[in-house]
Length: 425
Image 1 (tube, rainbow, N blue to C red):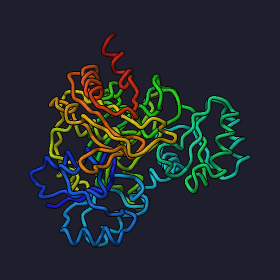
Image 2: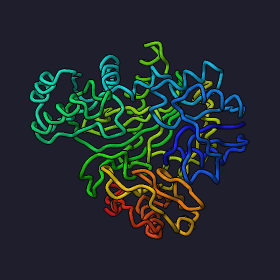
Image 3: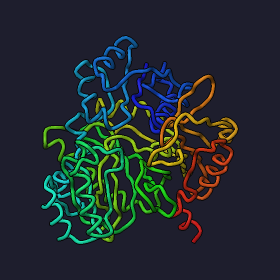
């Protein structure tokens, strides 16, 4: 079959890479793709916000499956539009995508179906939000309700910071995404991510991961879209995984169905492992970025039947196998990110850097011009490696990264530090 992957980031490059290994696939198109995908897929200048154009392309190219990578087209209803044209599409409906598109929607669902999460309040009024934050005390978490590219969450260490964040968000810092905000209690524990496919009724558990959201080493500085990740996450023991499925994922599946909008696609549960057990921080309704990169490296099975089963049903009857090895990815970003940065700087020596069979470099913010790879985004490359454990995978990833010639790039040097510490004890 012909497959179209919507998106241009490292997540989509990883999906294209994994999909390309399937014997079921005839050809892959990526819209718009990036500078690293052209060896695996045909990159097409298709704007996913133009839903009529996407439909027309799918009909012309006889697309058998569309895989929507990013959250924005999901929230905008691209899946609904394509399904009305009987085009098989992986991802949730616009209503179900509110699990990511609205923090308040998810918190209300958790409250209704007794899903463990932090105590919260929803606000559009500055004074009411400030009062609630003061009542909870610092530290406290302030979240823009809508999509803010991973930057709409502020962990306020003081009430002054909390009040400033409330003023900024409701004052328009994130545009429409901040028309409403959520104030919630600060959870203490270790973060982890859990992934599962869902067909509306059944789930197929995938794997666990842990990412590093903050730009600075030691998990300091402002939040980003993610500076690195590894899989599996040691904190997600068999018991913790079972509790996550039973207490968080399955109640969400039942709740969404009861609301009349069954969820189809991938659950990406951001968790805090507290003294009480797993608690939901937030849901994403697409594969994580950069978590997808480490999941795809560890996945042994053909991903295509699993994606189709998520759309068609019986996803619980699909069997997935995984490499026992760990995978780790390091994000190379443009200097200045997550603030302003220079674009169109040249990157070289990528082939040499990725020559080890256990290493792969997924492109994110790049383009290919006249045979050269140029950096066009904030997060630019995901240098990813397999290893016997996280420490070994980390060493391989940084060894590859250090061979890349890109003076305008930077990375964190401590990705996987929690797991490395555990492995050394």
